[in-house]
Amino acid sequence: MRYEGVIYRPPSEFDSLVIQATIGCPHNRCSFCNMYSDRKFKIRPVADIINDLDMAQLRFGENVEKIFFSDGNTILMKTKNLLTLLRHCYKLFPNLKRVTMYGSAQYINLKTLEEFLKLKKAGLSRIHCGMESGDDNVLKLMNKGFTQDEMLKAATLIKKSNIELSLYYIVGLGGYDLSNQHAVNSGKLISKINPDFIRLRTLIPFKNTPLYKLYTKNKFRLLNPHDALKETKLFVESLDNIDSYFLSDHTSNYCNVNGKFPEDKDKILKELDNKLSLDISSFRSPNAGTL
Ligand code: SF4
Image (cartoon, rainbow, N blue to C red; front, top):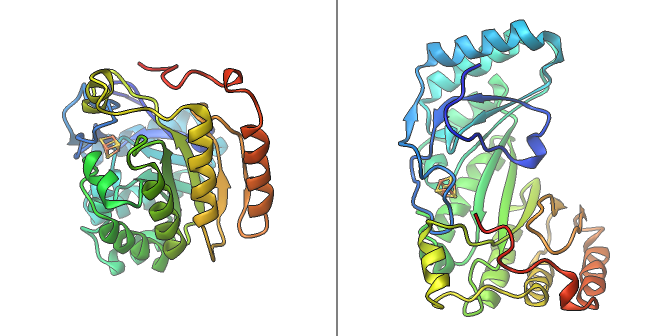
């Protein structure tokens, strides 16, 4: 397999074979993100990706049970090419159970339900989608490239096609000014979507990003650990009528709360209260890990 640049994958894909189908991110403009700022977006030729899959088959063969196609927004690839790749994956790896990729709302919305139904049938199992916020002001501030309504439309397409939807929420993305509306509107939007997974991340400002500049000029205030936990509580309280796994599977978070909705909602809220009873000095510094 051949890789270009740093490879990112969700922690939940730790044991997946990672194949780079696209390089970089077609959006590459989110205010908080520097993951792909060192590379120009391109879609690799299908023949090259197939070649990488063939190499992986020689090396790992029957051991491959999961494949994650990186980099950002592989869902943007033409549907016929994605279908070719998916079919090739399942032909090569007899024990393959799951194929996943990243997809943001604006790129999901370029495809029709019929296309997603075909992708599901060919074995696309899960989309990792960086919703980050369900509040239009936060989405605009972070230059996400989609609105709350567009996120709902994209999520509906994925849900209707029975592809699993893994949605990400970033605690603190609205800073102090937008914290409450970020939490409440994100909770309301997710309650309409009912994703399979809700995954928490906590904002850490990365160097060389527009957000980092705002932060260093004191135009964006990072939540302290207690306020980040309070925002998380408000977010959890706003989640209603969903049947989703709630996972705090990232080192950026101040709490490690996990569970299944609706049954674990009270347990999660209690765990957040327990965390809130700890002295603020027992948490990492809000800008620890700034890269
Ligand atoms: S869409 Fe994702 S990968 Fe692309 S810039 Fe935004 S956060 Fe980064």
